[in-house]
Image 1 (spheres, rainbow, N blue to C red):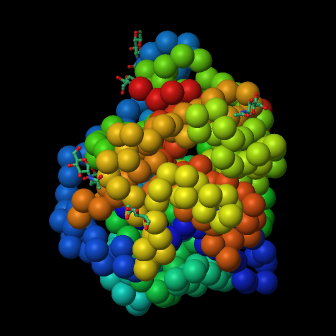
Image 2: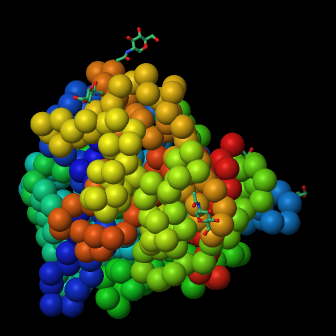
Amino acid sequence: MKWLGILGLVALSECLVTIPLTRVKSMRQNLREKNKLKDYLESHPYNVAYRSNDSDLDTGVQSVPMRNFLDVIYFGNISIGMPPQDFKVVFDTGSTDLWVPSIYCYSPACASHNVFDPHQSSTCRISKQAIHLEYGSGDMTGFLAYDTVRIGGLTVLGQAFGLSLQESGTFMKYAVFDGILGLAYPSLGIRRTIPVFDNLWIQNLIPQELFAFYLSRKEKEGSVVMFGGVNHSYYSGDLNWVPVTRPLYWEISMDNISMNGEVIACDGGCQAIIDTGTSLLIGPSHAVLDIQKIIGANRTRNGEYQISCNASNTLPDIVFTINGIDYPVPASAYIQQDVQGTCFSSFDKTRGSMFFPDLWILGDVFLRLYFTVFDRANDRIGLAPAV
Ligand SMILES: *[C@@H]1O[C@H](CO)[C@@H](O)[C@H](O)[C@H]1NC(C)=O
Ligand SMILES: *[C@@H]1O[C@H](CO)[C@@H](O)[C@H](O)[C@H]1NC(C)=O
Ligand SMILES: *[C@@H]1O[C@H](CO)[C@@H](O)[C@H](O)[C@H]1NC(C)=O
Ligand SMILES: *[C@@H]1O[C@H](CO)[C@@H](O)[C@H](O)[C@H]1NC(C)=O
Ligand SMILES: *[C@@H]1O[C@H](CO)[C@@H](O)[C@H](O)[C@H]1NC(C)=O
Ligand SMILES: *[C@@H]1O[C@H](CO)[C@@H](O)[C@H](O)[C@H]1NC(C)=O
């Protein structure tokens, strides 16, 4: 499956000057999956988030199940208001704000998604603060509100969030989720609002100031975002800790990218962000073109990079070295087969509109292989092979 890489999300209101990364899906891809989506939106068995009651380190872990949609995106349930109104959101480490559609939105995207009704919530407070979020293939106009937000067993009071009035473009129209819950640093979010994770900590709802992701491979079930602690049963060995180099995105330094012991990209080091809301491995365009050439992926008319499916059995690992530790990504992970059986490279180049064109973005392709802890207390990321 193929996403359109990363596009800048620009907040334009007088009070907003942030450029969180988010990604939108190409229209072509959306149409390709459109028929599947209807079925998909019908009900599925529900895994109730549980309150853990185990041993020392795991104590207080709050796990929220996520659904893997075709290895393209992972999302889970939250509710907002009293009584609760339910939404599916992407838990996105590449942006900071929370927003969902509202009943005042008449855009096609809002007709096919859950919408929030502030008048049906006794605890909702609406602000006059307008927000306008621009995406590459559409935009969201709305306003800020405050209400109770429930995530698994956690209840955050007075959480600031965006309500959409207008969602143009097609990117949200066929999206399998209603909104986005950002988990990047506060400096990337709407100014003067406290992001969800900061409120979890400030309101004393979690014992440790960290969260972690386990992204299952292929299976719809089994993916988890955990808040306040780490469940060791999702990874093997010890976590390797990497300092966050710039607390905006979850950004780290990478040593190099190699194949067969030869550096193929990021020679002498580069910066990378860990982004649960991005499907692929995104890099600067010259570097990604080199890699496509090395693995024998050819550009199609759509700008995608097609590759022989056989290559996933024959090509060597591509190794991301971070803080002196090797994180191999096998060909079976950097080559993905779509629903028609065509194989594509999982590498994609950054788009022109991206704010930091030299950044690498390690998305779900990487995170399915490596369990990841996002430690806000120590500004570091922990990585270990996922089970
Ligand atoms: C979200 O809630 C719906 C409705 O209760 C349920 O069918 C679905 O499985 C839940 N999704 C996840 C990822 O737990
Ligand atoms: C850790 O995850 C495993 C597997 O999902 C689960 O059985 C166990 O209860 C979890 N432990 C805690 C403390 O959450
Ligand atoms: C947690 O575990 C302890 C000991 O295993 C038990 O006594 C206690 O009732 C449990 N608490 C909950 C809320 O399940
Ligand atoms: C990648 O960087 C690491 C750390 O600087 C270094 O030890 C290693 O030799 C480099 N890899 C290659 C293939 O040069
Ligand atoms: C890519 O192009 C080369 C040269 O034209 C060709 O030999 C190869 O079969 C193509 N690979 C794919 C996957 O189309
Ligand atoms: C892929 O492998 C199969 C069996 O090994 C072979 O029959 C087929 O020709 C190969 N296809 C390509 C494009 O190399």
